Amino acid sequence: MDEIKLAKILIVDDQEYNISLLERILGRAGFTRLYSTMDPLQIEHLLMEVDPDIVLLDLHMPGMDGLQALKLIREQTKTDGYLPVLMLTADHTSEAKQQGLQAGANDFLTKPFDRTEVVLRINNLLKTRYLHNQLQQYNNTLEERVRQRTEDLQKAKLEILQLLGRASEYRDDMTGRHTQRVGRLSGLIAERLGLAEQEVDMIRMAAPLHDIGKIGVPDDILLKPGRFEPHEFERMKSHTKIGSNILEGSSFALLKLAGIIAQSHHEKWDGSGYPQGLKGEAIPLAARIVALADFYDALTHERPYKRAWTPEETLAEVEKQRGKHFDPQIVDAFIQLIRESAISLTDEDSA
Image 1 (cartoon, one colour):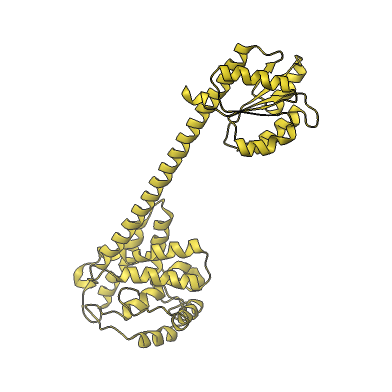
Image 2 (cartoon, rainbow, N blue to C red):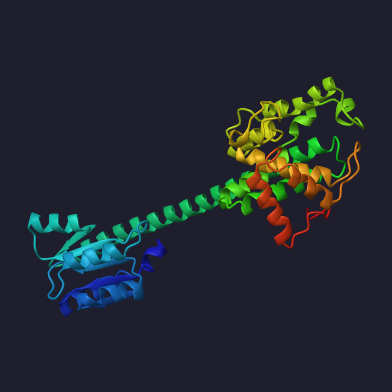
């Protein structure tokens, strides 16, 4: 393997003769990137400067012995890295080898050196490092592919959510923008309430599916101009349960939240809403937020059965419904949002 001959080899030994001998052996074997020091205190500096592929380390040295130096090397080695250390020693005792192995040595070369053994052991350790690096590179590439694939799937999920929301709205909103506006406004209200960023994003993305149940409501009810008869209103109210049923059972957290919103966004703070007649904080927070966003947007935009209210008329009605239809805290946050921010909630595209 040509890569092996390009390896950077760091030799640490307090005897100049040993360093010279190893450099001659390795040079004749074709290794050219050889670095050495007789001072073990220079190891930390050389590890950063040289970035060696293997370290040949003497066990017994003054100032810092091989075991201390080995501990320093392992502290400097990346957790996912593999830097082989070949311990050089004239100590043939099993105790010395056990101490070296426990400290993290990968192999031993006994003095006096055998030329063939030196080359073979170094080649074996470098091949192991080379294969480790290949595997690490492959894993990194695989992780990146998985990350990219996960990101693509997440984008696809969000696109599907947006398309589902638009599909339901095209029944009575030919622009299809109502769902986008409700999602954006719900996110702004949630943010103004001080919810965590992740919660804000979840509400913003789930809110557009609040009326997906309209898919199951007949046109003669959904598009009827004027007031509903009692039996017609009951059929209209069924869109909350239909939406909940459509989204029921999903393992996707965003769809679970969308199902909660679809079912409960017509509940009212005073308990007079539907389908369950929930009251106050028994109504899920996300549904309370979307209820106001949906109400504001629906009134300020024309539909087949109604004219568009002015923002001023709608805001007055929102304030009137504080504590009745809407959570007072959410009304306060919404009014603050309208009055203090520079955003426009009347613009067709930005609202």
